[in-house]
Amino acid sequence: MEKNIVVGVSGGIAAYKACDVVSKLKKQGFKIDVIMTKNAQEFVSPLTFQTLSNQTVVTDMFETPSDWNVEHIELAKKADVFVIVPATANIIGKIANGIADDMITTTIMATEAKKVIVPAMNTKMYHNPIVQENILKLKRHGYYFIEPVSGLLACGDTGKGKMEDPTVIVEELCLIANQTKEMAGCKVTVTAGATTEDIDPVRYLTNRSTGKMGYAIAEQAILKGATVVLISGKTNLKPPRGLSKFIEVRSAEEMYQEVKREFFDTDILIKAAAVADFTPKVFAKNKIKKQDENLVIDLKRTKDIAFEMGQLKKSNQVMVGFAAETESVLEHAVQKLKKKNLDFIVSNDLTKSGAGFGTDTNIVNFLFPDGEIEKYDLMQKKEVADRILEKAHTILQNRK
Ligand SMILES: Cc1cc2nc3c(=O)[nH]c(=O)nc-3n(C[C@H](O)[C@H](O)[C@H](O)COP(=O)(O)O)c2cc1C
Image 1 (cartoon, rainbow, N blue to C red):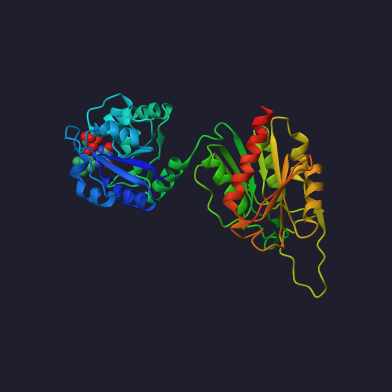
Image 2 (tube, rainbow, N blue to C red):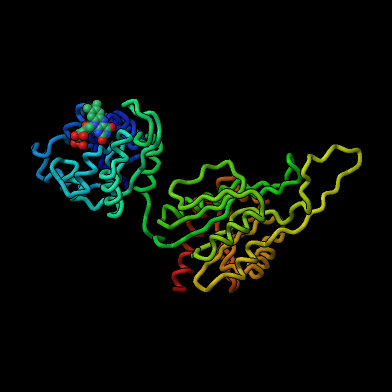
C-alpha cells in the first residue's frame, strides 16, 4: 500500500536540500504532503515543494481547508511518517516543550506516525546544552533522529551541524517507513560473506561466497524490527542501514571469536557465511619465493563455528545453518543439521541454475530435526530471507 510521508520544512539554510529529499521520496513511490513554517518560506518558495510533491503546500494554520476536514488533524492522521527536514533549533525546542503554535508543531503533536527529526544548524547552536537536552528528551519519547554530520557549514564555521546528505536521509526514511514490529525485541545475529585465510603477506585462500544471502537476511530482519548484528567476511556489498552492529572479520578464527562474543544474548543465529574449513598451518611472514618445484602448503582444520555454538546453545535460542553442496545435497545437509544441533538447515544445490553463490535468487529446502522437509521453488534471496526469518521466529516464539 502507498505510504504517506508528511514533510515539515523549517527555516534553516538547508531548506533548499529538502527539495531534493521530497523529489527523491516521490520517486520512491511515497505520497508526500509538505508543511512549511513562515520562516522556511524565506528560504524556499512553497511553489517549489508544490511542484515536487504534486500537492498543495500547507503554510498557514488558519487558512480555510480545501475540504471539510480540519487540515492539521487530517495530515496527522494520514501520515505514516512525519519528518522535519531541516529541523531548526527553534522547532526542536518547541516540540520538546509541548509548544504548538504553527502548523508543523501542531500537526506533529496530533500524529501517531513515526516521527523523524533531521537537525541542521550552526555547530555552536547544535552543541548548545539546551538544544542537546531537547534532542535527548525527544529521543526518549521515541522520535527518530537523522544526525547532522561534520563539515564546513554555510555560516563559515566547521563542525557538527551540517544536514545529512539527502540520499542518506531518503534511505533512512524508506527503512523507517517500511519497518514493522514483527520481530521487535529479538536479537538476530547473521554471519555472511567469505572468510580469507592468509598464506603469506600477498596470498590467501578464500571462496566464491558474495554474501548476498546473509546480507538479504540482515536487511529483512531489520525491516521486521529486529536488533540485527551482521558479522561479515569479504563481500562487495554495502552493509544495510539500521544494523545495530556491523562487525567485519577476515579469517575463520576471527569469525569464531566474534560469533562467540555475540552469541550469549542472541535469540536467532543465522550462519550464512562461507567459512573456510582449512587454514594454512603456518603464515609465512615474508612472501613465498617462486621456485622450480611444486609447492605444498600444509593446511589445518579451522574451528567448526556452528558445531561450537550448537554445544553452547540454550533452549531459548534458535540456530539456522546453510548447506551449500554439489552432490548428495540432502544427505549432507541432514548430517550437518544433526552434528551441529541446528534447529533447521537451509540446503541448496550449487549445481542448479539460479541457486547458490553470486545470484540474486536461490532454490532451497528447509530440513528439520524431526525429518520434515519444506521444499521451495526458485525465489529471490529476499524472499528466501523472509521465509527463514519467519520460520526461525515461529520456532523461537513456540519455545517461550
Ligand atoms: C540566513 C539564515 C540562516 C539560518 N539558518 C538556520 C539553520 O540552519 N538552523 C537553525 O536552527 N536556524 C537557522 N536560522 C535561524 C532560524 O531561521 C530562526 O531560529 C527561526 O526562528 C526559525 O523558525 P522556524 O523554526 O519556525 O522555521 C537561520 C536564520 C537566517 C537568517
